Amino acid sequence: MINDVIDSEEYGPFGAPLFDGPEARALRRVGVIDVGSNSVRLVVFDGAARSPAYFFNEKILCGLGAGLAESGKLNPEGRVRALSALKRFAILARGMEVNSLTAVATAAVREASDGPAFEAEVTAATGLNLWVIDGTEEARLSGQGVLLGWPEAEGLMCDIGGSSMELAELAGGEVGATVSGKLGPLKLQGIKSKSARKTEIDEGVAEMARAMGRDRYDKLYLVGGSWRAIARIDMERRNYPLHVLHEYTMTPRDLRATLDFIQSNDMEDLGRRTSTSQARMALVPIASEVLARVVRRFHPKEIAVSSYGIREGLLYEQMPDVLRARDPLIESCRASEAASARLPGFGRVLYKFISPLFSRERDRRRRLIRACCLLHDVSWRAHPDYRAEICFDNATRANLGGLTHSERVYMGLALLHRYRNKREGTPFEKLAPLLGEGDTRQAEVVGKAMRFGAMFSAQDHALMGRLKLYPKRGELELSLPKGDGEALWGEVAEARFKSLASSLGAEAKLKVVRA
Image (cartoon, rainbow, N blue to C red; front, side, top):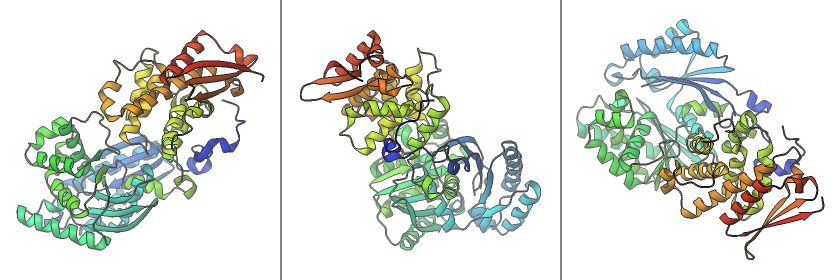
């Protein structure tokens, strides 16, 4: 472990790490069971609480709410399947020694006449107490889930389940107005006439808009399995290269084209092409009708997909404010460094060393560079021939919050260049269209700066010296302390320094100074 002698101010705007503090340890191994109208799921969170890993995640499409609109009762077959899943989940949770386990039920159980009997049956069979929440609470928790992975979220959250749809206003890191409506696709399936269903959707969305008090939001955040299925189809239609749903964005025009594409294509074929279950695909056409009306009513300029929802919202509910305020990306990267790096703590030292090259960058970009430094060495166990590609894949596809897709590619490319000078013939080529030319060049600089700085990863960080860029003179200067610092200089270090200078369009200059 690097000797932690750096003043607390050197943590900068990110603060001292909290991933291993008492606030975070209290949220290790937290379990959530979500009994929805369409699916029953167990998620167990672990790792850095502010950006948790999914220690366990299993879903059963039970269809509890199928036929509810006609019968007023839970679907008999779905009820048997749900109870079977809950028995399994209760046993698994005990075996995983979760610190806390919350079981929440939403629209189907709260609306069904036999919902209370099902609650009692679940408790008797499993020992679980189902927390049946109302629609506004469901909306609030789903909104909090978006904030868990998207702290700066501003706009309207729209969560579609099997039997209901919830809206929540997000602003200033808080959940504002909320409303719930009966616009889930399982509920709407009972209306066989397309014109009658259109009227039902139009009136339902209009009523929800009136309850929200406004009908225009610049950004729409989509939560729920049916929305994610539509997003996968949008990726397929556009031949989008990065198949990560979280923070995937669509324009209204793109979405309209995809909704038309859905109506004119075979659901079974689309399901195969997007690896989506047929049970989910059966709900997509009606969900598409709902989404079209939502977009038309609220006029968003951008539509984004959130993989986080009510389950993550329940975790967020348990977080103290000091933990909620942290950057999920930085906290997650710190946890990864502590668990996997050769020298945990050196990422902070490395960031200090290379940061003079990026002093004019905005905070949003500087946090990416800092995250790269924290992750620069976590894949050291991989075979050297594949280390660069593994670093790239980890960054672009990891479960990280607070990252746009272009930022994922930026981090992936920087980490690729940490281990490799050239990017030709690498996985980056497929994702290159997601990153602009200027950002591509800068990511290379970040990677080569980390590659060079890692040459000095000794216990005494004072031996690293200082970097200074003189853009007008076209010079990159390294000042090394005389003695041991100078002795760390070698042929490989010199070659990497010159490569870094070349990526900056500068000449490399070495300066030896008294310690």
